Image 1: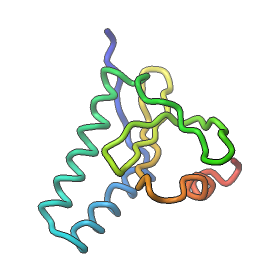
Image 2 (image 1 turned 30 degrees about the horizontal axis):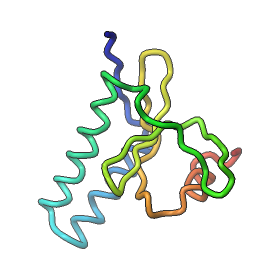
Image 3 (image 1 turned 180 degrees about the vertical axis):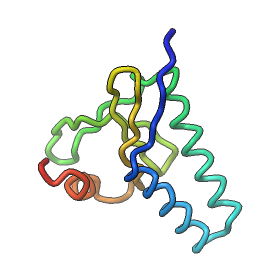
Length: 109
């Protein structure tokens, strides 16, 4: 079985920093570090099984996006596969309006 490389886009890196900072500010540093580590661990599992994530469908429209997703609840790790590389594009709180977040990320959608 071929291993894939996992890369975080700048946007995903920014998302992870923002999640960590929010948890550190509203809870504690230890929990912020734990959540950040778990998200990174979940993403690293895509090296071996990148196709296991289901495609993301937009709520209400059932429109299929180009993103696949895995979870470290409540966070969604959205990614695309290109060749032998998994590109993590966004890390979002699943309780937020996903359609709006995707439009901000990709205004052409």
